[in-house]
Length: 438
Image (cartoon, rainbow, N blue to C red):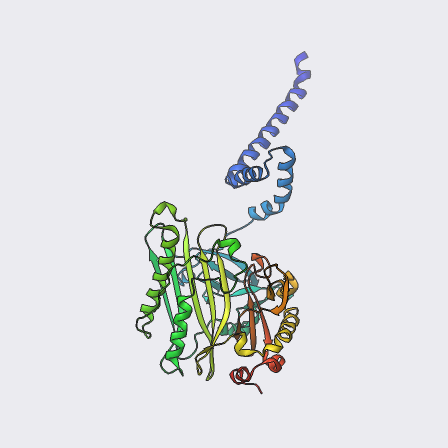
């Protein structure tokens, strides 16, 4: 009986031991349930910082608490078959945009960066490669801006009649044929070249000249140096390497042959870079060329051009812009074509003013002046401006600044549109004729 007086203390100790054991088991369960991701992340952090002390671990855990909590509640969006059928051999990720009256709407991107898709549980509402979505400027949970380089439309998911506005972002122009061709190469790891180009039919005025201009764009699509000559050497090394691009000499009206020619250029470039040894190739290589006709009238044609190249690393690199062609005079439309030389500073001032009105500019505050000012060998400003190549949309001139050019990669490409009415005093005679202003 004397021993019974110790029983409460013994039971208390056993209870404490059980609780500790359960907490310890929870710790092991947490590690296994999360996978080894968090353990790997901690090891990577220690390796980068060169530390492995408790303070560093505590700092890392503090920074990652919010991400860990959100990751534990994340539920992947299932990809329905009608979305997967948009593209073959595709890996997709998807996120929920909003839910309206119990109806969810999803936004998905394809693993090879060939397509972005807006869909609900029943059908695909929009599929296009060069397309962006944001809500930060709408101020409403059901309203989203969808945009490409040429257009920006506001869609209210609580008002399904606004869905018709999306058609303008991906439709094929009348009398144009959209030719799609994915080509896979077997040397090294599997390499993909994706070709999507809108070709004019014979009923389009000066269709033969437009086709020849398109092929020249296809031939030069492997080089990004024209758009970002000052930036790309930082990321891609020496740009003076000649890859031996050919000149297309086949049938100008054969879409399949042009697509095959473009793929062969790309594969030849990669062989020139990596040779034929399988072990030298990155685990993933792909290139997308997408040229969508968005304007075609009696004077000019404009394409939205998207080039996306991935050859390993955290992310690939892409450019997206509008390119325009005067098919009457068979002339590429650039700054010299459009603007009077003495008005270039006025053009720059108007561009800056229009840029500051856009939500993207307000969010990222890019340094445009650092990009558009010519510099001499000593990196001193010369006073001359160097604007990117302009593109003609239906209602204005669009200047596109590529990722890294005026802001970080996460900011993406910037597209600033100047209305024709505001800039007409800066246009040359042929520029006024081309855009139809007096």
